[in-house]
Image (cartoon, helix red, strand yellow):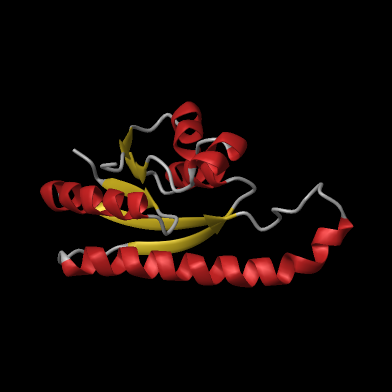
Length: 147
């Protein structure tokens, strides 16, 4: 039923729960799985030149976090006997990176956590899951935390 599942991760507990659901689906359907982490390479665009100084430090920290998140997800799939492709993707917004990756990979399902941010960040920055739902034509399984 699902030939290719896209699993975006962000290092959150909810994303790891989505990895668990994607693992079960991949095993049930024999699906190919791709895990991605989206980095915004220019998060300081438009906020002034004072922030440009921290760009290299930001990219270094974001890349390290991305690599660790992808590694953790990959290990979860490996523990279940599944091979996955992984990628760190750059996009201006996380939702756009997820939607574009789904299209370019020809995924037929996106499995993602409902949120990776705290309530204040979600209020200010918006919900990535909601934006993905609003902009993709692919089916999306949104995994909520148990809290």
